[in-house]
Amino acid sequence: MVERIAWVGRVTVPGQPRQRVVRVWTEGEAPGPDHEVEEIDDPFAGATPWQGGDGGAHAYALARTAKAMVGGLRGPLSRYELAPPVRPGKIVCVGRNYRAHAEEMGNEVPQEPILFFKPASALLGSGQPLVLPRGYERIDMESELVAVIGQVGKDLPRETALGCVAGYTLGNDVSCRDLQRGDKLWTRGKGFDGFAPCGPLVRLVEPGAVLPGSARIQGYLDDERRQDAAIELMIFDLAFVLSYLSRVMTLEPGDLLYTGTPEGVSALAPGQEVRIELAGFELGCLTTPLR
Image (cartoon, rainbow, N blue to C red; front, side, top):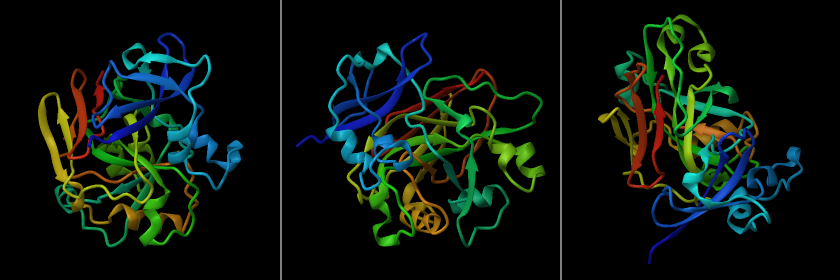
């Protein structure tokens, strides 16, 4: 039996800056240009108390059961432009979470998760161009699986931590090595506008579901595969990171967790294009043209 998959994201009508939340249903595949979208109320806001939502609700359930908005957007996905799929309260990233990547960068393998933030202004939707800042010697791509929080979570046990996840998408932790190496903190090196491409859409998953460890995060620069590693090679798995993080801060619906990049990070230049996919668990393709 083919799995019916629900996807959510944000789009804009060409020429209009306002972002709209849409849902797409597919029969086992990633949404394509001909798949129909329907506008719905934001399920992440609906599960967030400070946005007037129900703090006990889960964005996964709200997204799947939401009624299409009367008079809302409808039509093929190709009619609209993709925006970052959620509007997060915070973007948390895990550094050096693959042993081979830590080694290629000349760093020790961490004993605890290395966590850092990216600003919301770093987000970039799939297909949107990234204008690389000039005057720096090396800016790298970092292909990553991204978890999207769907329910308020604090002090989560590792055994149940995945229950707060609403779905998954893809991300690129773009990094300016010049600044990252020179600064004690990574805020500047990883915080430029557009340095957090994300998308194309969020694939909703049953709370508590575990992704296949054999699924491979793959990053392409133009048509050359530069990164390719199974997600089971993460030093700290997602459940551990969620539990570890939630002991410090409350996880809120719409928050994004970039889970780390494997080896093969590569320098970027204007005129190239980055594509990121997850082989073995369909999330679509995150595409970023470079200017």
